[in-house]
Length: 336
Image (cartoon, rainbow, N blue to C red; front, side, top):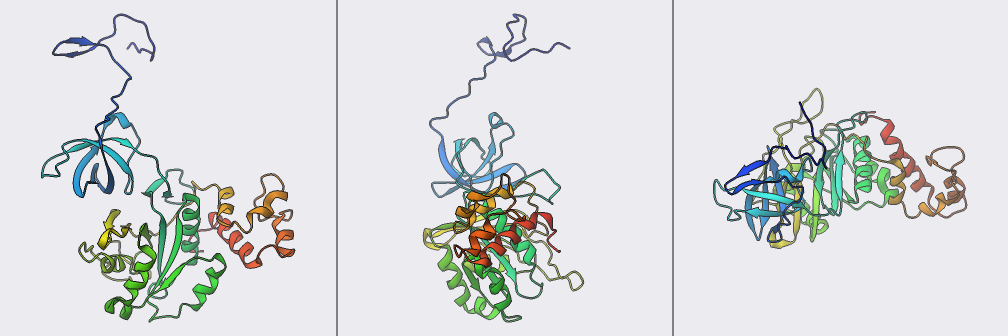
């Protein structure tokens, strides 16, 4: 079978027929200058829901985008039927630049990246203080992914009626991460929702957490008009909940005050895609001390200049400990 190169000058190439005769092949793509811009709310088996001028429109990716996929939170340009009526379908022809990107891999040995959400301002890491037991390694991994992707982390500790938050707050205190502690009673009377809401106004916030921690329950309380099914129970043997949120979904806060992105519960958060050298950027108080580090320093070796930098009083030793703990997460499993 004959194959032709991109710039062949052969004159016997078959050309696509049309009503007016044959037209040559072309790599020139239409500019779609009349395309409308919108935000991807959810993705379901190749169909995307895009919000355009407050109208949810069903769309699919145009072939010209190739393998480039749009994800929840993406700003996209859309052409076609934008009425949002039943059985109509528009086309996404362009994906705009991204300000942040939350990614994960299935495990640390898996090179395939799974993009969770784009353009989020912050990552709310939801963890229960008991039932199921907290998993600090999972939290560390989410923090690394947030720092790497350009998101500000927010720690949300649930079920404080079952266990005190002191130990967890001590563990992450040196990272200066904003946090909210909630209990079941406070969720029911609305006080916890009000405190969480203060951290979300004016921002796009992705919620992540393993099953059973109360993530979707909290999202339902924050966006009562768009209820999502919550987890049925926590397995008594494994201490883990059953996945009930199966796809990421962006939900608007009342008063146009921001967005909440509920993501599926995760049992693992691989960091194969993360370059450890970028984690230091989340520690601006330590970063100047790396100027005297040896080339390709891992910041966790005998010759690392950060030890002397901290010893001289330029930064808190607890911050260096936290940095090294986060850098080590890529070498450990979440359950370690």
